[in-house]
Image 1 (cartoon, rainbow, N blue to C red):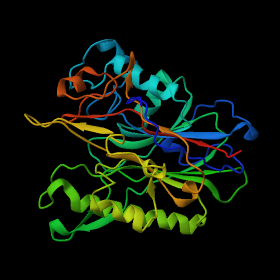
Image 2: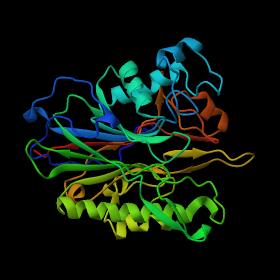
Image 3: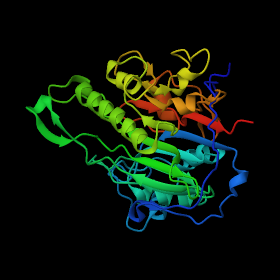
Amino acid sequence: MNSLKRRVGFLNLLLVVVLTSHSGWAENFSKHNQPKKALESIGSLQVGAYNLLNLFEKNGKIHEGGPKNLFAIIPEGRRPMEEALKTLEDLKAQAKMIVNNHYDILTVVEVENLKALDAFSEEFLEGQFDSYLIEGNDPRGIDVGFLVRSSLPLEVEQRSHREETWSDPTQNGKKSRLFSRDLPSLIFKAEKSSKPVLVYFGTHFKSKRDRPNDPESRILRQAQVERTSEIVKAYEKEFGPEVPLMVTGDFNGEIAHEKEFTSLKQVASLEDSFDVVSPPLSAKERITHSFFPKDGRPKWAQLDAVIINLNIRLIPPRLCNIYNCNLHGPLLFPTRHVESHEQHINLPLFFTRRKSNVCFIKYTEPA
């Protein structure tokens, strides 16, 4: 089996009637007025999640003159860290992956802001996508956003859960924002329909960096996961138990094994799309993340996922692919730290490298 393009499941999403124009929080999305497809022409939706590791700059702000000023600094080759993380080649490679996989809905993680996402879409994606992003809680400006194909006749409502709070037991019950970034959602509706045809969450849970009195931030991450499960159930109560729903993005933990993720299954009744196939993927087949500790052996894990509720699982599974490519073609999965530096599609972050297009799922209307 080709290790660069693994078959991991195929899910059909019944779209009884599919969809019309955009609405939502005007200050939090940007539209490109592409001609809309006819309702009857839509037979499938392709979705995925992609950790972009920032688009333009380390500090989460693009230059005053816009992205073209960035490109003029050093068109090819590494830019100084204080100016930007990405080269022009990096940006083109990421755009190529998005365009070539024909996404309809793509969750993007670690994006500076809406301005950066929209500039990337306009400059590299030919204005094919509408950009959705609500500024989250991370002071570094690494937010969760969405790209939605402009030609889809979809009515979209965007929501944020960044205001959620919790009492931190490691800080004597101090109240603070719960989500490290946000738990944004997109609600897709058919024309004149009061019920969604799809509820779509994006997430980026707390990393495994230690907090005071919280090794690997497990206490905080578990609280985020448990509240996510409650929010999922609240959406099902609001829209009805039959609504198709998924949570996508960077979970920053091994959802198949680590106990802080158990509520996703036990409370929210969500399943990893990698487990829907028969037989489920092996541990090796579901790797989405590589880690290269200093003077240690490399480690691999699945930290990224698309998890789905029963209303999607009930439809026969077919195909899901993971891709690992750059501008010049397929890449081998890195086995050494130097290889992660040599690959242009994603730059290393704290000696990690994330695979592109994590969990690419195609949902097709049943015949």
